[in-house]
Length: 252
Ligand code: NDP
Image (cartoon, rainbow, N blue to C red; front, side, top):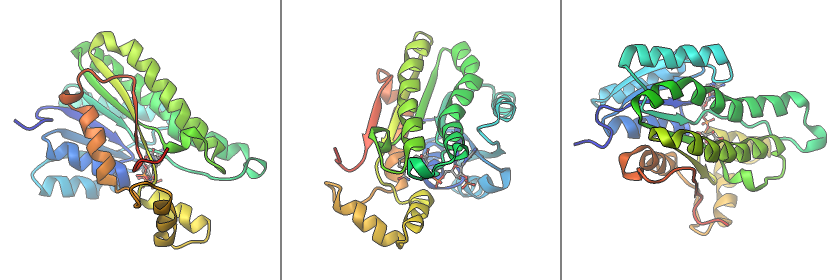
């Protein structure tokens, strides 16, 4: 029996990178996956890929910072598939700057997209999970939660994700819902390629620099984070809740 057979999953920010890899992994395990990104069109290619491999997925356009859009997205999934079993809060952005150069708009954008969005999505799916007495929520934190130069907004948001995760595990645990976070180190995606560009480096050179500081001497791939998310979203992780698991090649 496939490990996600009959499970209904939502993955946000799933048009590319870690979110797309997670959507593919859950679908390969038998889940029906709502591939959520800013526009339905952006999510469509991942849905096509999943469908061509024999999986089931639907593309939904939703800005996860918009409360009414998030409620409509969750309602669409519940109306169509009956409930939500798995929520992966993955959508995120960076707007890096040193404190003295950072406008409040960059602080707000990063806090809203990386942290407030998770509150909104958890709020929107909790009724379905509590009613079913089953749920798996996995939130994307980051190694940057421990402090990262030029990322005061992002580090604060990703540290906030860990607090949100620990608290929701306490509140939702009595209803059979586990809540965990994954905190990746450097993963080769469009997000880190954009960071490389900002500091004037080719993506490969930037990755080599990160790899040199990593015990495993390489950067991570989206599929390596997706596998950890999938474990936490599976029944194999039934007694794991409130945890943040670092997936960073051994960096301290
Ligand atoms: P990507 O930028 O490759 O993908 C993020 C996706 O989220 C994009 O498709 C993006 O759309 C979408 N998105 C952004 N804002 C919204 C929004 N408001 N509503 C819906 N979707 C949105 O990122 P990664 O795959 O690299 O990262 C995924 C997660 O993992 C993020 O939370 C990130 O912070 C975290 N992470 C990543 C690390 C890394 O090294 N890559 C390390 C640690 C954590 P668009 O492209 O149109 O903006």
